[in-house]
Amino acid sequence: MSHSLDESLEFQPRWGADGLLTAVAVDAQSGAVLMVAHMNPDALAATLATGEAHYWSRSRRELWHKGATSGAIQRVVEIRVDCDQDCLLLLVEPAGPACHTGRVNCFYRRLDGGRLVML
Image (cartoon, rainbow, N blue to C red; front, side, top):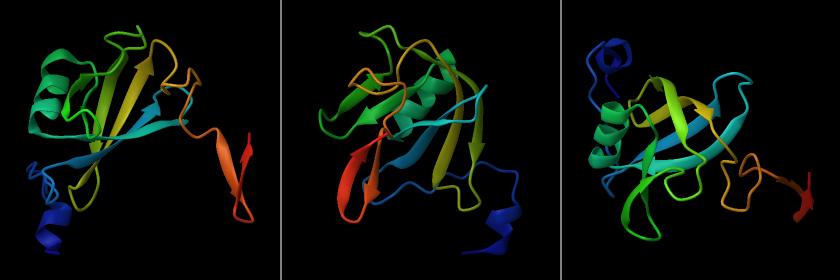
């Protein structure tokens, strides 16, 4: 990795072999991690254009406007880029649960000795 990319102020996303960037959505007010998703160039462009989080659904293989059907829109307050420019941190104001299960976030279990425990 070039040190110049680490310090660069030019956005040069390093798309993965699958054409995606990892995107971590964080509640802008509390700092809590809500979910981890992925973005392709279209999802990033739609997010920048609308101010609402759009992701690429790997399972459905389609652009996904978070909350379009559930109402749990994520308004993007800020987007941060990691040092390698291969991961985005979206600071969002969620209008509802982030998880498709209806939970506030997707991290509602912890690993304990090889077993999952509900939080």
